[in-house]
Amino acid sequence: MNLPQRIVIATRESRLALWQAEHVQAQLRALYPACSVELMGMTTRGDQILDRPLAKVGGKGLFVKELETALLDGSADIAVHSMKDVPMTLEPEFALIATGAREVPLDAFVSNRYESLTDMPPGAVVGTSSLRREAQLHARHPYLAVTSLRGNLDTRLRKLDEGQYDAIILAAAGLTRLGLKERIRSVIAAEDSLPAAGQGALGIEALASRPEVAQWLAPLNDPTTAACVRAERAVSRALAGSCEVPLGAYAEVRSGRLWLRGFVATPDGARMAAAELEGDRSAAEVLGLQLAAELRKQGADEILASLGG
Image (cartoon, rainbow, N blue to C red; front, side):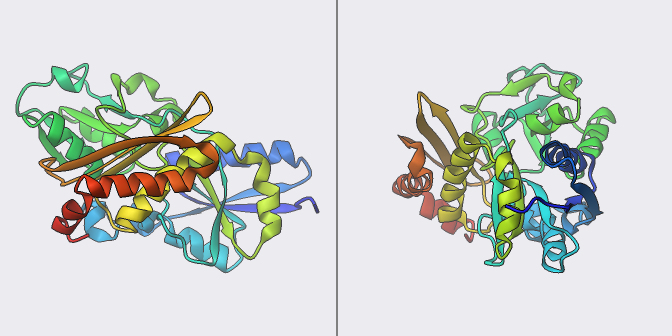
């Protein structure tokens, strides 16, 4: 393998995205001391449209498109993403070449007034940007008022601190990575808020036509995280494709086996299909497809049809 001389990383410019890109940059500099590793910050459509829920404006792919353009035109070699923001199906020009070790993949309860969701009184306002979280909140805490919350992490925390919300639900990974762990009042168990596919994991994308880049990044791939994320994304891809729907998928490795849980629901939480399976970690995507089939037996297709999915 020819060692790289220069690697350019395309990244969004939010504080969390920059942390993620700088994390990969530091790993690459340690691997290849003679290599120049540079960041190219970009603003994406997902960062610009802040007045409407993501599901209304095209979904999470809005955070990826501009970075992919930089890969195509050769101005960047790789793009670093939160895996939960990566569309479930990539265009054939692109490939996910590495999945970094996972941070805590669970959701976090953040509030200045309450310790947990169960402490909140009827009518208290919870902010979230996610249909997945919204559906589970309505299903498990129907007495709470759930409202939309957009913006980067700092903006969301500011809105909470201004009193616009009694609590907000965020990914624990983002808060931890930015040194904001003290803002987490409680981490929500997967049983109460099943994470999104890929939550807490970093994905590295490159052009499929550049196998040398995949070789350079191979040491950053965490096999356990990669297997879990492949299973989770297979569930989402099979059921929802690229659509934004209330769907969660979460895999863990236990005693060498892959344990996968998933659900799909209506946004109001009134209808929910849920299932879990265990299988061989080497057949992660097969397990994901099996779980999607099990969810269909539980009524997932009818739920998706009611959403126009």
